[in-house]
Length: 362
Image 1 (tube, helix red, strand yellow):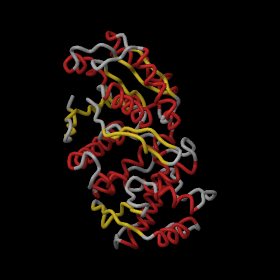
Image 2 (spheres, rainbow, N blue to C red; image 1 turned 45 degrees about the vertical axis):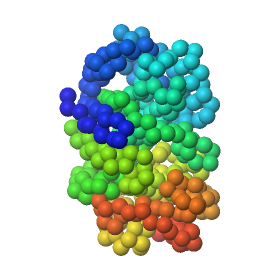
Image 3 (cartoon, one colour; image 1 turned 90 degrees about the vertical axis):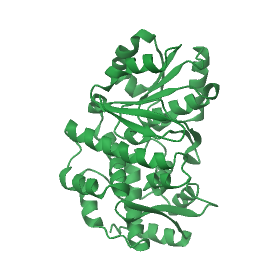
């Protein structure tokens, strides 16, 4: 099976994307961890029920232990993080142990942060079960949330490998498909205009994407992220482009309460706002009306929830990781495939957000 190679300053590792990728996991463990002492699987309540038994069939010879956390963003708290560390100590994991992150982006973020900090760092492997995780499982950003902001406590810590077992995606509900596909749209908008045009013209529903098409889109998204991470592992420059749509998106997530709106659905609203700003600030030539029709056809709500307050959203955006001195900075597009980072005056952003929230879609 062909692997996508991710090259970073600290590590190189493979990403396997296939409906049979787990068949290679046992061989990978034997070849790369001949002194493996303990295998810990961190998963969530939903994925445990659906997919843990499948994974166990492939690693049973290692007699793994597993720890189950709450589903979604509820997993990314100090308390759950501490519980995972306590369990790891109770099970006597050492520096020859490996953690398997079985789940979506939240489990990957949590398990990766546990691995990064347990005994100052032990290996971990990402085993994504969502479309969204094709973005979060690659690149080594691991974190938990704080009430003041998403992913504010974390590290850059690369996995040893990513095994993307496509069969797991068949169990996803439609809202999770939408959430994950938002990141595929993001990758296209910041790096591949041809991919964006193809998706807009050919993907008119997310209910049933052919497996070959899905693998192709996910593979291209991983390649795009890998290309950016190779240039900027620690997000000191171009890696920030991957946050297109996330400035407002993360603020919406936090104000809604983590878990009450999926990450991708919030990011789509953030991308919509960023595209509007791009037209005004960066002279972007873009058919926003056509894009909005397509997004609505796919089931996205592209408006900020009415009950959210502008001043609170702006305060959240000031705490964004791209912000300097609490000044508002956005990833915008000069053209599709050419992102840029722009610092905007707070008064201007407030005015634009007011128009955006009062029905100005285009």
